[in-house]
Length: 139
Image (cartoon, rainbow, N blue to C red):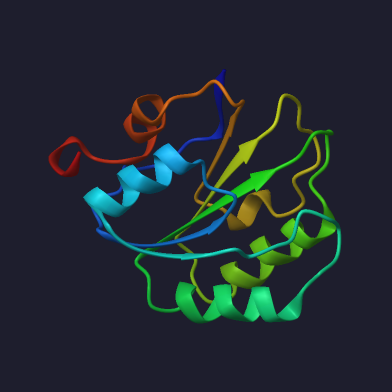
């Protein structure tokens, strides 16, 4: 399942990406092959807000053309540490895409901050995702 909650107005042609969160291994490998990427964890698997992880993400976001945050939840709401990461990164880079791996999702208080929001489950392939985000010239 892949659902576009907020579509990207124009697909990415950029090659300098900052990527945060829990990125599936296959997707990370493909991103590294095709783009100039920097990765950071961004958040822990609990609700704890780790300022060091957020600061690292902010440093990397500042120099990227686009930021993609891979958020994840088993419920309808993201943990507060992921909300904090999204808000903090947006302060330094407005070219923000949030990809939420979740079956259901309802609470997106930062929706206006993101250029795009895509919801998917664990069955979405790299091919499906890249068609949503990237211009054909670079894929």
